[in-house]
Image 1 (cartoon, one colour):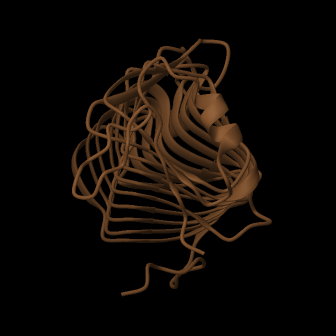
Image 2 (cartoon, helix red, strand yellow):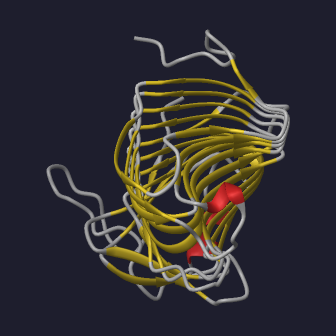
Amino acid sequence: MKPRLVVVGAMLLAGCTSPGVSPGQDISAVIAAADPGDRIVLGAGTHRGPIVIDKPLTLMGRRGAVVTGPEDQPVILITTTEDVTIRNLTVEGGYSGIDIRDAVDVLIDGVTVTGALWHGIFAHDVQVTILDCAISGLTGPLAQGIEIINSDSHEESVVQGCTIEGPMIEGIVSHVSHVRVLDNVVTGTNGRAISVTEMSAGTVERNHVYDVTGAAYYCGDMSMCTIVGNSAAGVEPDESGTTGGQGHAVLIQYHSMAFVEDIETVQISGEQLLVMLESFLVDHAPYPLTRP
């Protein structure tokens, strides 16, 4: 069955482009009325959140579409569902820009997140693919760009082609999850730029990290990591004073195992590769590399 294109406040005419849901209209009511699999298009302008998506559908924006929300809630919450796509939107404000919980087959594509308090994108108990996102201007003192947590019961999640700009404590981080982190650019973090931690398994490949403090790439807390073909430039010590925060390109620690290869570094204050606290390197990938 072909999904419907849901538009409000305009007619669909052959050969014409609909402006979609107009700013000021009740997006929640449109979602409530939508059938599973429908596509909802937001027109240019500022739309008020929060928005809750609890059924399979696509929410997308025309050029200039912005969704804003209050600081005490996520701007967009995807919960207890599957097969949801968020595409071509700017998301401003909120506790988190996009919050995904107990959901699978979620696609976040071409989304810009700014001004959130704690997370650009937060994902708990999910399978999500995040492509070509841009995250910046987070306001909380311990803000994180993308956090994927407690998702190891699902197929791996993917973060690819995103640009994440601090200040924030971590750019991309997984906890107890299977992840693939590819072709991203992270700058301005003050803890760890890209982190696979707390019994996670992950491939970290072809990323670029620059102008950060602490560590560029981290594998820790009983995790398995494949870290290949990445670069790091301008990595300085953080304020913690710990050995692990002294400006390392790659840090492996706390009972973790990693395969590390082809790390390009420029202006690294610490070690190019530091392995400590009962961790070790292996000569093959413990977690699969990207398929050709």
